Image 1 (tube, helix red, strand yellow):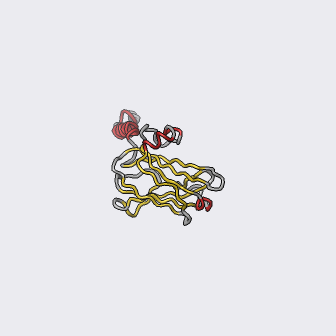
Image 2 (image 1 turned 120 degrees about the horizontal axis):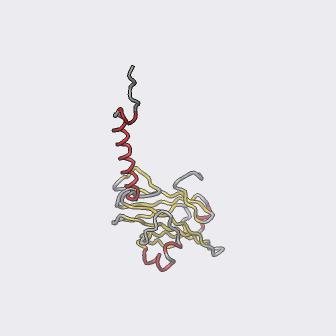
Image 3 (image 1 turned 90 degrees about the vertical axis):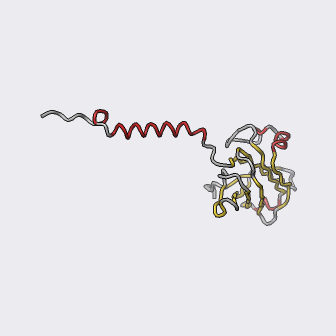
Length: 174
């Protein structure tokens, strides 16, 4: 299970995260970026049974600082900034069945950050997981220059491989 890309650590506890797009791509599951702007369903299945006894809340925050996929809670600017940038908040509840399901209608493409907090009632301790994601297509624009250079290099190589003088030795006269 440690190699599961959809595994989320909430402090010492684990959960399996899956996203669904029922209107756009009903048969596909996502655990990272969401490829289209549409209604989404987030499902969190608790792997660690301890989470079933905790109050768990779920928040979606706009990545207003454009931190990207390295975002941490501290990068978001503290509780006030998180509250201000929040687009969705599900209050803390106990999910004794071990499954949390959230429906959210995305209307804007861009960067978002999901925040899950688990509050241990007996000890008063809280655990947090932060997972950045992008909605509405990959965040691949930063790689466009590299792809363009690679394409040009391949084109020059293919063009040059057909030319005798560049890549092949000239035949010797006998």
